[in-house]
Length: 408
Image (cartoon, rainbow, N blue to C red; front, side, top):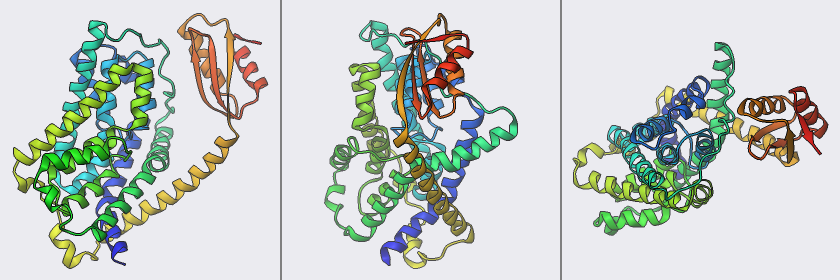
C-alpha cells in the first residue's frame, strides 16, 4: 500500500500540469506549421541556431520523436547547425514537462531547465556551424520540402486536430515513459534507504558523473524523468545532480546518436553528444555552487509525511482523466500496431518529375490513396517510397491522375 500511496501522491501533483501541457502542445501542433520553422533555419549563423532552439524548447517531443522532425527540417533546407540546436533543445523540455517540473520540483527548476536547454543547444549548434563553414561537413541537405505539414482547414477542424494530437497522439507517444518514470520514482521513494546516497551526495561532481554514465545511454522522456529526479533528491543527491539527469536523460541515447551520425555526419553527432554532457555538468555545478539552495527546496515535501493522502478534488479529477487518457491511448496504440503489422513499404520510380512542384504534386496525389500511411518522394532519384496497405494499382492511378507515370 505504501508504494500505491507514493504513486498516487506523484500522480496528483503532476496531472493538472501535464494535462495543461498536452492541451497547449495540441494547439501548437494544429496552428503552427513546421514549414514556417524551416524557412527561418537555413543559415548556419547564430540567429538560425537561436531560432531553432527557441522553436524546440516548447515542443513536447521526446528524443526519439524529435528525430523525424529534425530530419524533416534538415531535408526541408535547415542547416546542420540549426538542426543540431533543435535536436539538443527539444527533448530536454516541452510545455508539458515544464509545467510538471514546476509542480514537482518547484519554480527554480522550471526556470533553470529551459534556460540550460537553450544555452546548451546554442553552443552545440554554433559548434556544428563552425564545421559547416570550414568545410568539415560536406554533404548538403536535399531540397525536398518538409513532409507531414498538411494543416487542417478551418478553425473547427484545427481545434479537433489539436485535441486529437494533444490528448491521443501525444499521450500515446510519451504515456508509457511517463508511467515508467512514476513507477521507478515510487520504487525509489519506498524501497531505497534514506541514507543510500548520503556518501555519494557529499561529492556532487562524482554523483553527476555517475548519473551521466547511466542517463546518456538510456532513454527517458522529459516528463518521465521528473519524478525520478525528485525521488533521487529526496534520497540525498544534490539539486545539480537532479538537473544533470533532467538534461542528459531525455536528450541523449544510442538510437539518436546513430541516426544523427547517418543523417548529418559523425562529427555533428559527436558535437551533439559533447554539448549535452558539457552543458549538463556546467549547469549542474552552477546550481550546486552558485545558486541559493533554498531556491531548489522541493515544494510540499514537508507536508507529504503528515497529509500525504489528502488530495484536492481538482487533482483527483485530473489524475482520473490522465489515467483514462493513458488507457485510451494504449488501446489506440494496440490497434495501430495491428494495422502496422499488415503494412508494407514499396518503392515506385516516377517518370516526368522535373521540379519541386512536380514532386509536391506526386506526393499529394499518392497521399490521397486509401491505405497510405506515409509518403516520401525524392526528386533527385525520382523514387517514391510509400508505406501502408495501399494497392499498387491505386498508387499508379493516382500518379497518372497527377499527370505523371510509374516506370515498371
